[in-house]
Length: 192
Ligand SMILES: [Zn+2]
Image (cartoon, rainbow, N blue to C red; front, side, top):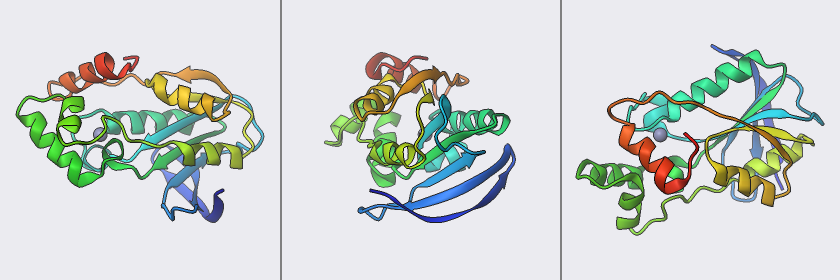
C-alpha cells in the first residue's frame, strides 16, 4: 500500500495543480499531478504517463511521449478535476541505458519491438500497479483514461478499476517517429 509522503501546490504553464509524492514498499519516487478535487469522483480524466527523459525533457522526435504529456497537461488544465500519474519507468520499463542501446539497434534498422527482444529484454516491461494504488487512494469511482494503448485499459480493469471511457491522444507524425508509431500500431495494438 502507498502512503502520502509530501504534497505541494504546482502552478504550471497549463494550469494550477497539486503535486503529490507517495511512498511504497519499493521506495520508488513517482509523481502525481492533481487538478482540482478528485476524491470520490466519477469519470475522472486520468493520464498514466511513463517517464521518457529523451522525449519529455529533451523533446526527442523519435517518439511521441512529449506530445502525449503536453496534450494531457493542456487537457487537464482546462478540466475542473483530473490526474496525471507520472511513473518513473524509463524506456517502457527497461531503463535509460537499455533504451539508448535499443535506439542504437534501431539506427541499424530494427523496429522498437525487435530491438528490445534482440537485447534480451521484453518489448514492454511497464508496471501500472502504482497507478492503481493512486486511483484507489483518492477513492475514485470511475476514470476516463487518456491513452491509445488498449493493454493499459485491460490492466486497469483486471486490477478492479472502473474505466468508464477513453480519451484518445492524437500525436503528430514526423519523419523520425513514423516508423515507431507504425510499429506501436501494428505490433502493440495501439489505436492511432
Ligand atoms: Zn519517448
